[in-house]
Image (tube, rainbow, N blue to C red):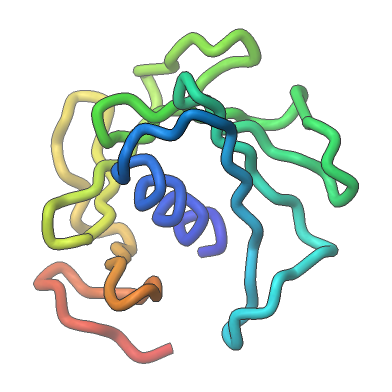
Length: 131
C-alpha cells in the first residue's frame, strides 16, 4: 500500500513542469508529518527514481524506477527499463492504475487517486473507499 502511495506521489511530481534539479520525496503519516525513519525517494532530472536511506545515502541495490511519458516503469541499476514487469500510469482525473506489460489495465488491483493534495483509495469506478 505504501508503495502505491509512493508511486502516486512520484507521478504527481513528475507530471508537473520539468524540474531543473533533483527532487526528494519523503513519506508522511496520516497527519502530514514527515516519517524520518522511513526511506525517501530521489527523482533525478532524467526521470530515474532512486530510494535513499534515512541519512540521505542512495540505495543503488534497491529497486529503482524510471518515469517516462507519465508512466512509472521498473528499472535496473543502470537505468534500463524493465518492460516485462507491470507499470503504472496516471490518468487525467488523477487515478493511478496498474497496467500489465502488454498494456492491459489491471482493474482488479487496488487503485488510488490524487485529489486535493491527498492520495485516496478508490474502487474500479473511481469512488472513494474508506480505510
